Image 1 (tube, rainbow, N blue to C red):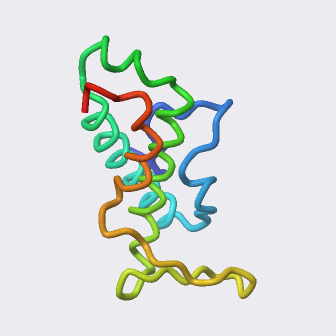
Image 2: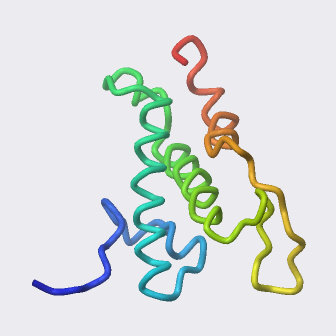
Length: 117
């Protein structure tokens, strides 16, 4: 058995991973990014629905973006105090994280789920 950092589910070399998106560097951060990506995928798929008909209404690129947004909200909760994320760069202003990680994804998915969600 190896103690390697787990890969994010269904990593696709053509698309950015959550670990890349949030710039996770350490092994711990990469594992947290993988866990956040897995949870985000489950949340987004639950919103979209499980049937093939429902899944086809959402383009793959839109689904991937929704997963990245939800995953990054979940990932950045580790460093947020009182729901405010302060990033390591001095050039970036702190932002308030949504209490519901699906808030941004719901807006992204809404045009494709009319009558379904």
